[in-house]
Image (cartoon, rainbow, N blue to C red; front, top):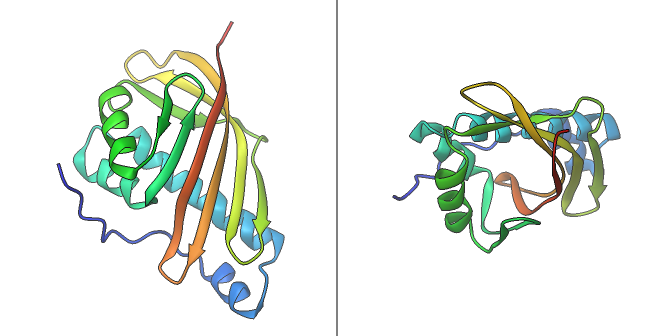
Length: 158
C-alpha cells in the first residue's frame, strides 16, 4: 500500500509567527504541540480506516525512528505504519494521561514532547496498559514532522 502524503500537517499560526521572529513563547509552543499530539493520536486511534492511517503517516518524517521497549525499533515511516496497521488498528486506542504532558523547545529545530499514556481495547473499552512516551518534533517551512518516538516503560494496569 502506498500513501499520498500530501495531507497537510497542522500548522498553528501563533507559533509560525513567533518562530519567524526568533523564538516561540512557551504557551504558543505548548498549544501547538498539544494540538499536534491530539491530531496525531486521533488518527492513530482511528487508523482502521485508510484515510486516518494515511493522515497518521503524514505526521511522520520518511526516516522516522520509533523505539518501543517491547516491540523493538522501526527505522522508517513505512515500517512503522506496517506495524501499526498490523498491531494497533481496530484493536486498541491510546489516551493521553491528563496532566502528564510536557513540551520543551529545541532551539532552531522544534520541540520535545513527553508524557504518560494509557492503552484501551476498542471493543470492550477496558484499559489494559500504561507507558511513557517522548516525541521529537521537527518544525520546517513544510510544517511539523515527527523524527523520533520513544515509547517505553510499558506495564499492565493492575
